[in-house]
Structure formats: structure tokens, C-alpha cells
Length: 270
Image (cartoon, rainbow, N blue to C red; front, side, top):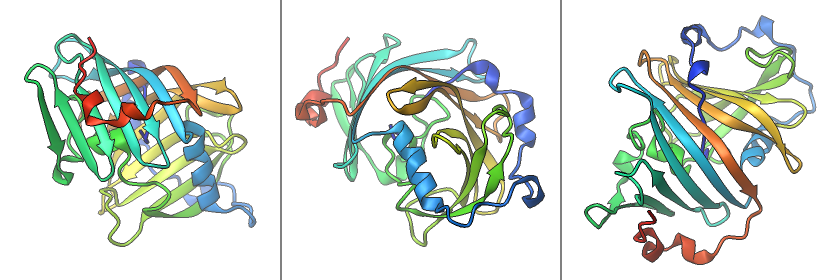
């Protein structure tokens, strides 16, 4: 989830975000001639995902429709090479035990209160996940940032917004023809030294900036520098934000293969 998932500090979602756009070419330093854009994109993905990754996180959803922020705690397991993943909701109580199982190319959902397992069709992959600004596709990473896009290095940002001390590559992701993606393009800021994602801007096919994902609270996990807070801000929905805060993440984890089964999906762990 973007893969595996993600995290959210409510205060990060400031009004100023609505006015951020792709930087003009003059604002960036020219890219080195020997740097491969796809290799940078791969390094960014590798900084958040290993072949087998487990995650404990809390998601906070802010919306004008809610009287108070909604907090959802969950666990996830991902096996990258087989494209299998499992997510289990831990709280709130009314959602506890709800599970999501990806067995490529299918996504299954188990609803414990009615003891029902249902397949989520491709047409619903872009719908909201658990009432958040994340989508089902964000959850299970059905589209691939490496395989479904071509990559172009726009330059180097010497002082990225919100992270002025971290020089960043700015990489443009352009969807390949007929790739199963919704975005017209993605522009990503990727920290130059460690490959840590700092920000992603998502555009529609008309070039309008619709969504941003901001990464913060960067900590060392082994040899990786991992952002522990991911904030999604839909710029076309005033007052909305979703924050995923990682509480524990394990790379190169040992995962029992039985985790990725429908039998396990139906085990509502409360």
C-alpha cells in the first residue's frame, strides 16, 4: 500500500496547499546527465516497501461532515512479489474485524457484522476507502508507479517546501498508454540522498492539480529513511484531509502464507 499505507497529521493540511503547483523550470536546478528517472522512482518505492512488509498504523479523517476527526486503526501485510496483501481494521469498534484481501487481480472485503465476503470490482477501485480521502487502489496498489508510468526527471529542488534542508529530485510520472490508472500525471519530490518520498502531486487528464500527498516525520528504519506520517489533501474538497501515522513498520518480515487466504479474511479479530 502506495502500497503498502499511510499517515496523517491534521495540522499539516493548511490552506496554502491549494496554491502549490508544479514548479517552473527556472525554480529547479538542472538534472545531472547520468541520473535515470525510473531508478529514482524505484528507489522511492523501495524506501516504503520491501518484498514482505508489515505495518501498524492509525488513520485520521477530517471532513466538514464529521463532528470530530475519525480515527481508524489497522494492520497490514504485503507480499510484493506475489502482489498479495491483507488489511485488518482494529478500531473503531463498529468496524473492527473488517478485512481486505488482495489476490491479484481481485480485491475481497469481509464485513463481520453481516458475515459477508464480497469482491470489490475494478469499477470501485477509485472509491473512498473507509470514508477517507484514500482510495481502494491506494490501499492495495493495483496500479504500479513503476510499470504503468514512464518517468522524466524535471530537475533538482534545492529547498523543497516543508523540507528546505533536503535537496530533492523532481520526477514526473506520465501514464503509459492504456495503463489502468486514473491520474493524468504525478509529480513527485524524492529526497536526493536516501530516496525518501517527500511529496506527490496528482493531476487529472486536463492538467488540474487535484490531490497532494505529503510525507513527514522521517525516521531511520534500518538503512531506510522512512516518513512515518503521510497526509492526503484533496484540493477540490475544502476542509478534507486524511492522515496515516505509522506506529510500527517491519521490512523483510516473515509472513505466514495463510495470512493471504479467504479463510483468514473471514476471521474477525476483535
